[in-house]
Image (cartoon, rainbow, N blue to C red; front, side, top):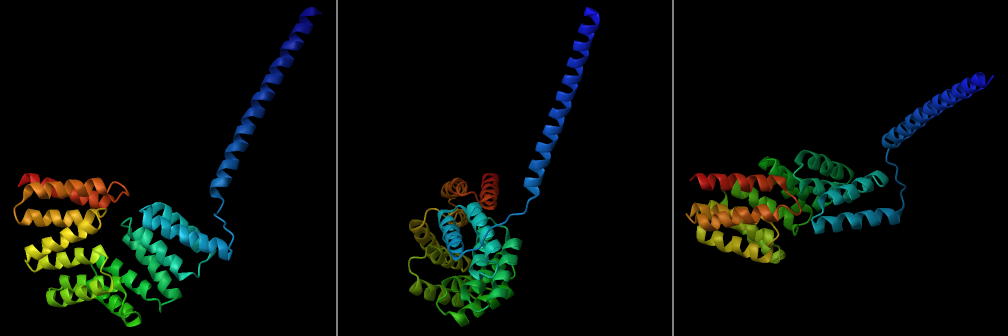
Length: 274
């Protein structure tokens, strides 16, 4: 009898353990399934004028702070809740342009233009993306269209001047940059692009003056140091060229601009091999 009782208890314990194990397996499976359902759940946001304005302000603040990924996330939410807000698509495009995602940037600025083609900044933004994609004729077309709407669109003037430089029309380019500076004298990028124009004209002295001015106005732009470093290299000043390339790498780490880091590193290697 005692033996039977002991075996019965032992058997009951085994059954209980088995049921507990099965229950644990089912519980873990249901948890995993729940997590998968959460991951597959689409992003849903609710529209309100307040939410739209808040996301727009937040996205532009992130752009100004150099937090491009955070800006991208804010504009992504904004275009979901307010898909007909063309300026939201322009901001979305800019956040990706600043991360060097040119194809996606072009797609989103095209969306902005499809919603409202009468806003000059949409057209000048597209002209800038097209310039970086190397489509200079199309870039010139959209710059000109932007200036027909707003003759004081500085970005359109800068891109148009840069295109003229690429086409060897240096005098026209200089006139355009001079006009842009009259409109926005505190914009360092105008001096940067005007400096590039002088360099292309083999006027290295004025090119250096313009690039130095751009850097003095804004030391947070790695592209300025890369351009000045290349000019130092041209005139045979390898020490200052090396400093500028190294400075560009450090500046491009925050916010991270990997394509500029890669470019500066490649130039450093070339410089050391000379």
